Length: 154
Image 1 (cartoon, helix red, strand yellow):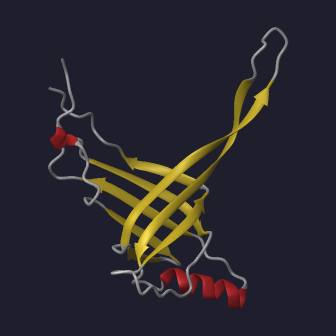
Image 2 (tube, one colour):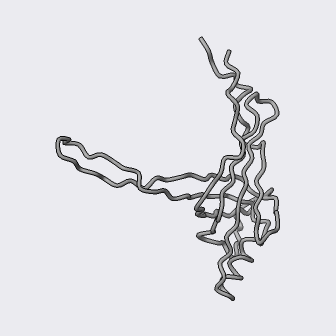
Image 3 (cartoon, one colour):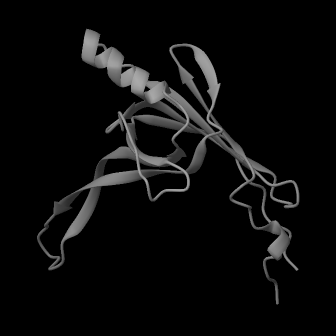
């Protein structure tokens, strides 16, 4: 019987994320968690001879969220630029999962044309040991530039 070796699971602390904002590459070391997903748009289709409703994929939407330690003003600067000039800056995020103890190698995903939905402008919290901020975003394209290898089964 084959099974996944625990050593081949990916540690959530291993990897990195970078953003390219206005041509400048910035390492997003302040991220505590990041998740991006592709949500398919579905159209319901009813046809003769079939009682059930079928679904046809008619597009998709990219959505993501980040929780970050409150130590960077980069996204507040983007919000300020939009507020003052009306120019909304999109950016790309590259997420690399790599755990040197795992046999599966590295997976790299690039999210294109990311745009922040909500920006925390200021924050204080007397109950918090460290300040964090949540940030939702959208993106409209992505690539998988490297994929995990198959795990070694035992």
